[in-house]
Length: 212
Length: 212
Image (cartoon, rainbow over all chains, first blue to last red; front, side, top):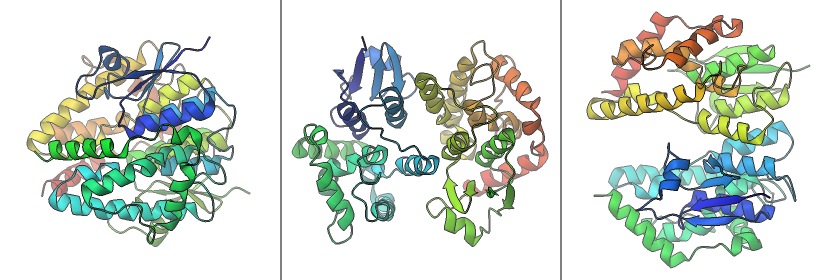
């Protein structure tokens, strides 16, 4: 009997990747909600290095780091469809882009924020190009890279409100906008869509805390 | 006919990972030396995002990011021995620790450097524990995690001189010191050992540049 638990925080985009992966693989799991401000002794025990969710606990063994967890899930539960392709070159490509980060820009202030915003937009242009003519970042089927970037779909609007920077603009990023709508058609993703208003309040709070 | 080229800079620890991997797999490759201060148009073309070596060019297709390249090499050339084990849990473990970075501490200044040094030592203690009773970080045989951390073996002494922080101290890190000696017994690693004095001058220069 498989025992799967997931340590989560409600607003983490990294937790979201794992939540979607588990749902798409049809894995039953128990959710352990963590409070950002008051982490449980279990979380600190299972992730002593980063002290953060997500932590996947599989038969009492912890696995940490959202991208590492995604590959673990993909290698452990091969059905119904793999997230990563078989071809080493395509795998390398998805792994390379999955590590491509620009999430933290909204926490920056002043000149640093201007630079971070420029970087975020430049990076988004790379991601837009990845879509080329395909439906998903991973190709014709949702895969590893879509899970890695999925946070963009449901976090972009609250982030836009908090930072004043339009992210998924129809004119600049038409392919990413279509991709966002396509993700929303997937049941596993739609059902774990966070409340946009509550997310906005959370981002505003983080921004204020880091600016002190 | 396989055509493999590696874009390198002589002092990069990330390039070193890939050099060792190619040698251990017995892959013939052409080296393209890059100058830190004057990067070639090819490098910028093949790695437009980070504009850095290492870039592996396999039959004219570029692969970037040292850890992504290691997995690509492991999946493409399976002989003589795989770097990563078969078991998903052990793979996840090696992937998690391979991403564990503390290389940049020597560039920091003042209070930031004190903090960065503390973090570096705390992180080294984690790595020391990984060795447990095994010969290598990956177990009884040199593997993925050893390649990821290999820079510690030949960069630690020049870094110690430049920062004044003893890294691989026999009393504090006896297992890592034995591991370092074991790595040096491996021909592929020994033959690409960089000159310690030249490395020291290079680190000193980087430190001075970043402190301006």
